[in-house]
Amino acid sequence: MPVAAAPSEATSHTRAARPETRVLSARAQRIVDHLVARVAAAPIENEPYQNFFQTEAFPADIYAEMRERLPKRDSYLPLNIKRWKNAAGQSTRDRLVLSDGELDRIPLQEDRAFWSDVTDAMMSAELQQAVYATMKEDIALRLKCRPDQVLDQIAWPTAMLVRDFEDYRLRPHPDGPPRVVTMMFYLAKPGDPDDLGTSVYVERPLLSRIVGGRFKEVSRFPFLPNSVATFVVNDTPQRKSWHGRELIEGASIVRDSLIVAWLSQDFPEFGKKHNDY
Ligand SMILES: [Fe+2]
Image (cartoon, rainbow, N blue to C red; front, top):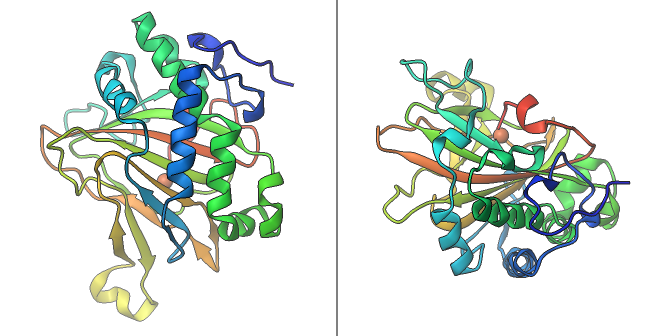
């Protein structure tokens, strides 16, 4: 069994662990309580796959602190320099995998303590249960169980800070196992374009692809400060969670997000091995 971590220990997150083992600090618990209430109040969309978008995800003071304490670029690593780079060879998608021990790359102790609490909140069983409870039907499909069994399934949490730059693009893809749910917190700052969110796609019927292409963008989550977009991962003939990111244009664009994913099995170093976000 994983060992319970002391609160605010920056080095405590060495890999994904079963969420119920965490001991939360008062600050981490406050984040969880607020977020769980916002998740429970979120309007659920059922088509083309279960998803929700919600504002005011974090307490306002915590969100302001997240923006202030976002790590500098040299604390991040390229997520996949072969796949995501611009014409000059620079990474267009950087990562700092909070759940894989990369918190240690943040130099200031107070910043590490803050992000450690955020990580504990993201990896808490309470948050996972709240999210799974909102979209039981698609999660049951993904986990091949009944909806009333969804909350009893083991879920392995992962969390990473992600930063995207001009020329980043992620073509439509469904994600796949071991992912079950992907939750994307948009860490936008005032003035960021609101069209920088993730797109939801459907596949066009074969005959209509000649003109319009294989995929049709049916909606796009707005990239708003302190918001969160969440969807259930499925990659089966009857349900595919097609999503992606259209090309980012604009040399001044810095697209910050915090991505949490729950997995159906333990997958150490998920952030480094999985390049398909
Ligand atoms: Fe993805």
